[in-house]
Amino acid sequence: MSEKKTIYCGSGKKQNEGWLKVTINPDKLKDYIDEYNGNKFVKLNINIKDEADQYGKDVSISVDTWKPDENAQQPAAQNEDSNDLPF
Image (tube, rainbow, N blue to C red):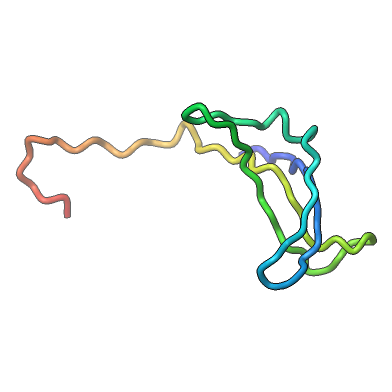
């Protein structure tokens, strides 16, 4: 399994329990824009750090580059004509 480099694209501060204030650099996202049903999107990971950095930022944002393993075995399709229960 190869190790992937984390692509950091922003940071921010936790304002309270339900509010994160962040800034994202769109130039770092342009290579990771996906399209689905005519809509464009970018998958991101947003993490709250245990300690703030030198600028007071305690939120880290990175691009989610995970893709399913194409070599993984797919479950066998069940025979639709079968009267067997699936359990």
